Amino acid sequence: MVEFLDPRAEPGMPVEPYELSIDVTDEPVTIGLLANGFPDSVNFLDRIEEALAVQVPGATFKRYDKGDASSVVSGDMLDSIVAECKAVVAAYGH
Image (cartoon, rainbow, N blue to C red):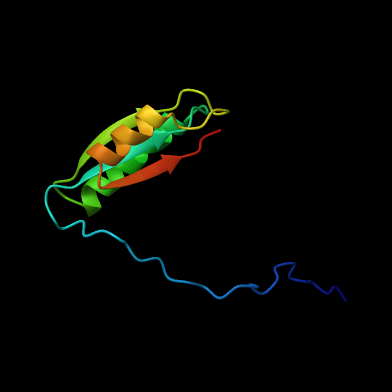
């Protein structure tokens, strides 16, 4: 007889549902897309933009790219993101 064991543990923390903190129906909404500099982070954000454009019709998108995965977002770039966007998606590629 073979006994199979499921290696997955029960979650240790309660599941918290994610709720948007902004109203995306409030036009116009600009969503920032921040690539972290890893290979394919820009390509990944291309797919994110396509999906979000369907879910949030009328949204516009602004692209940002750190260019170097080992650095933090510069103060100037962060100021631009805050001034120009209502929401931001940060992408990690490999």
